[in-house]
Amino acid sequence: MPYPSRLVPRSSDKYIPHPDKEELLCRWVKPETELRDAEGKLAADAVDYKQIFEYSVNKIPISEIEDINIEFICADKQKFNSEWKEGEDGHTPLDEDFRYNNDRKHFLFKIKDILYSGTYPYPANAEHNYKFIVSVKHVPLISNICHFQLSVDFTNMDDSPVGQMPGVNSKKLILAEIRQQLIRVAKFAIQEFEQKK
Image (cartoon, rainbow, N blue to C red):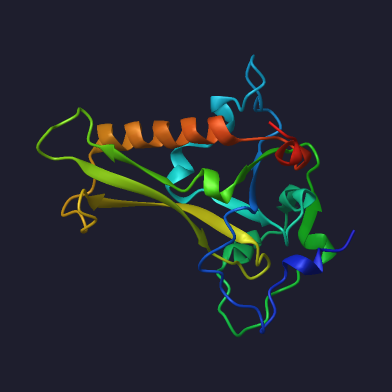
């Protein structure tokens, strides 16, 4: 099966600074990891906790769910993590560069459901509250125009930049809160978003 041409950037493609909030993001999960908990929700272990501040996802559309099963297997596979530059053509991987790892699992969520903010620090301090803001950024790669990342910014309560980044305990609290948000909003098939509540 050849590499999907829909993923390869063209010189005419543009960065997407403001993706449609109704569109979906898809994240793959290792085959050995439990995807759902006992209640059928996204399992906490399915969220790669330490990567949340720069969580890699694919946007659907243009990407399709099976695209997240692409696994680069060549010796120099890191080259496919190179960021694409607008105005340049991307790179189409050869058949021997990748395979489809169909044992991977996945979950999906709407962009609008992860755009939110909260306050920190931990422990709570009435005099020094700060905000964290979760956004979605387009970070296209040379072989994946649909690559996006969650991004977390930190500000003072008046939205001015913080002078000092959050400490270890605050970071753990923020990571846990973002993971809980993903657990609340995640679904496992596109059709689940189309069902009436």
